[in-house]
Amino acid sequence: MTIAVRRAGLADQAACIRIFVETVTATFPHEPDAGKTAAAYADSVIGEEQWVALIDDQIVGYISVYWPTNFIHSLYIVPGFQGRGAGRALLDEVRKRAKGDLELKTDKANARAFAFYRQLGWRVVGEGMAATGPWWRLRWAGGIL
Ligand SMILES: CC(C)(COP(=O)(O)OP(=O)(O)OC[C@H]1O[C@@H](n2cnc3c(N)ncnc32)[C@H](O)[C@@H]1OP(=O)(O)O)[C@@H](O)C(=O)NCCC(=O)NCCS
Image (tube, rainbow, N blue to C red; front, top):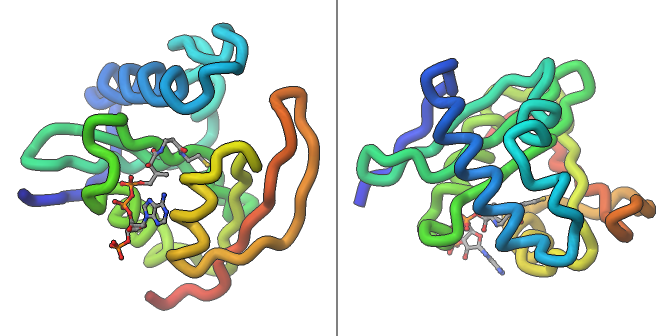
């Protein structure tokens, strides 16, 4: 098995839409369907830089970053390919490029993602409440792997 990461281009958008819809549908079953569409995907990546992860040449996930605030807005690995290192590879790619501390938010209900980030060294720096439920704000300090 090989894992590769590269910048996402226009030609990758159809794959990213499929990954977004499938992954949010599986991960957030109780959230409204309006947040699980191609339109919701398009809204979520405006102004952001994206990378895709490939396992054996197949696009299996993406990460999307809003650099003005060093904020990782999205990280999704399609369910059938989770747990094989693609999520870590995408985070590593962004961490290599970060000029300062990185932050992201994750739903408190998403215990699996929280455990994943904590294991990779992310620390809780805040919390809040959205229409979809409570969330944690996490920070990764540094710019060197
Ligand atoms: C959360 C997510 C991005 C993680 O990506 P992944 O490719 O499945 O995770 P990886 O295989 O890269 O795991 C990297 C490390 O985290 C660890 N890890 C992964 N899931 C974990 C869990 N549930 N608990 C503890 N550690 C975990 C792995 O063991 C691995 O460490 P290791 O290499 O030392 O074994 C992915 O599962 C996903 O997209 N989930 C659904 C959508 C989601 O929740 N996105 C995040 C929203 S904030």
